[in-house]
Length: 254
Image (tube, rainbow, N blue to C red; front, side):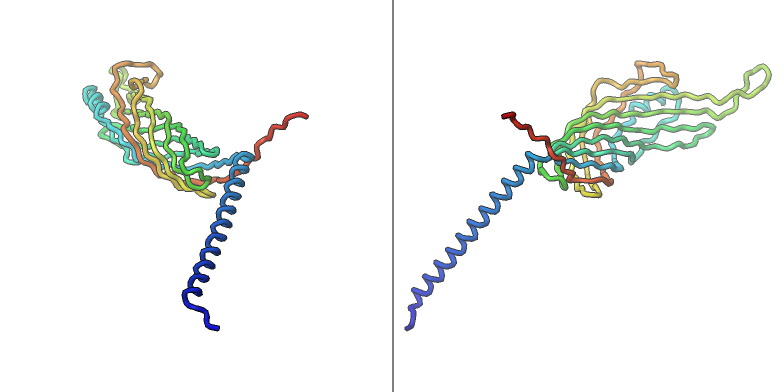
């Protein structure tokens, strides 16, 4: 008996719809079970990541005020380092991401009958919130605190006589240290497992004025302002992600 084409098409369509509905129901059930399992695991475990890394940062530093001050004092001007390198650590607890780091740059260079070193450094602490809720890839806006520091050390290598016995005295030295407190607002993106690769960038907002001390620890109030504006950094390190720590479950006594 020959089956009409319309009937064949109708049966085929109904079969396809039935299979699609069955697959949709199965997928929904599996998704619901997976989500329920994730919720249960999230309630039972705390996910921790711990990494140590090397930050390589470009930091926008304006040394104009410092060089103007040194020019008035007839002292050599400083050169701002193009890259700061240091050490840091990242700790991620569920969706909270904490970073501690420091970075420094600068070199000693020789002048005519003198030697000068002027390293610039930053020390930072930030707390971020992971928008992705993933132990392996995080995207985190963060807020924190940074300390910017500059050290100016000048040594006069020209021999000097004491004017009496003709003996040569030790070279003249002077050291100044300036610290600037700053608010750190930024955004970080990192991929981590056993290795960590991340990028960070933020703006630095000054808090108060620059605090200056001489080499012997004496404070002076008329020093120049240090200006740290923003930074862009690459972090490369190692550690471990997705460490699951079972939470203690409180039980009600019967």
